[in-house]
Image (tube, rainbow, N blue to C red):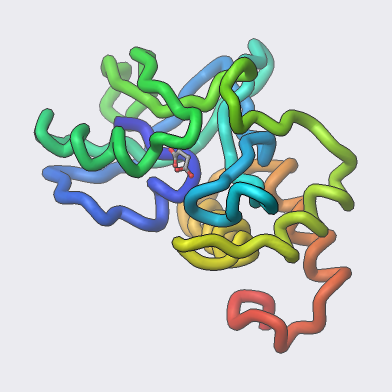
Length: 173
Ligand code: SIN
């Protein structure tokens, strides 16, 4: 299973192995609404989904998991995400895998917006799993740990640093 968002840094499920991986032909974007984790129904937050883009590659993490773990993951990723079969690039070569993507036609999809608007929405949103700011900053930190590139995520982090004082969050300090 390929994780590219919270599944990178919040592994609340058992796994046999974890390694850096990438998925060709997709770009990570904060274009999915979150009514259940990082926002609420009347004020959704923004979380990542994958957009088909032949020129892009998304870096993340591949987990080897037992089939039963999908019961938990299908519930966790229920807000518009669907499981898709993909081919992953691992350090050892290519491997079939699955990924949760929230497609454009799902009920919670928000789509593109000016980056400053997305940054504001992330700063302002909170849900049962915590703040949307945690989600963005934890993801940016996890991508740096993986030595992964992602202009969209890092630009959002930079804009948020411009909008908030360093003491507003431990990961901004
Ligand atoms: C993922 O992490 O792979 C899916 C999106 C999310 O749960 O943040």
